[in-house]
Image (cartoon, rainbow, N blue to C red; front, side, top):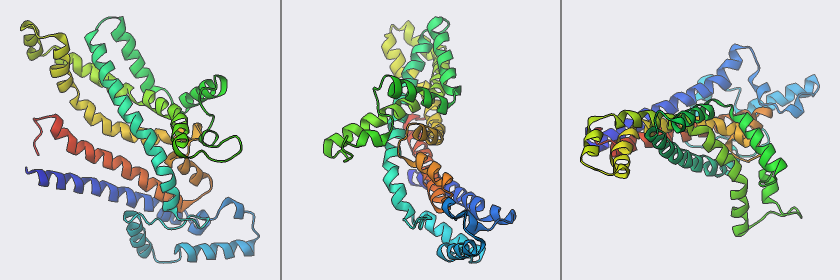
Length: 335
């Protein structure tokens, strides 16, 4: 299979997944309420308007019908919705602000947390997994395996609360929220290098927490794969030839044991993007996760639709990147 054909097939596959996500998104917010005999416009009504009298309430619903096109035929709304999703024009939220502007404001904050956490957790998983395999059968191996399983199964929100209370509340090593970190005592925001320094300070706890919560599954996978590779004939032959352990682990063990771990990275990105909702909310860190919570609390349907789509888009793009990188790592996979 040629390189261009392979890339085209993978792009089409992932695009199909993204289309399916968009359709499900539309089904949840546009079709399910109709099935349940719920006035869709009422879902767009902010909480502050819930106490209106009957006449004003109906006027508000009619205004929402016109503003968001909710009185149009379903197929028209669907076509407009799909065009909006794939052109990243998500319309206005219930306050009248462009949804894309709110997402853009928080996108890079989430990016600055998820990507470092993904890189750090992968490095930690690979190295610790190989080290545990090199000590297989002894206390180091058993303890490491327990740590891997513990970090994988522990609730993310509970860990975030504990980390926040200990390191921000008791020890005061880190800020209690992103807003606290980025504002001076007089209320003015930091600028220039000081802003990025304070941002990194505020992002440290979310990054470390996500790293610790996401590395366990890959580390255990790396450990188990490394044990299998260590038992293989070519590793035994390398040892007989007198090849140094350092070269055996770097050239033979790591290169062969890492392949399933790379595949697992895509799955863990989905975990990170779901976990970041709880992490950002717990640490009062402005990002797509906390924006999603805010949209849900305020019944902001356009913002929910846009945020869901962007988070799904990020996860699918990572899966696509893994599809394209995998053949470079494993020579047995051909384009």
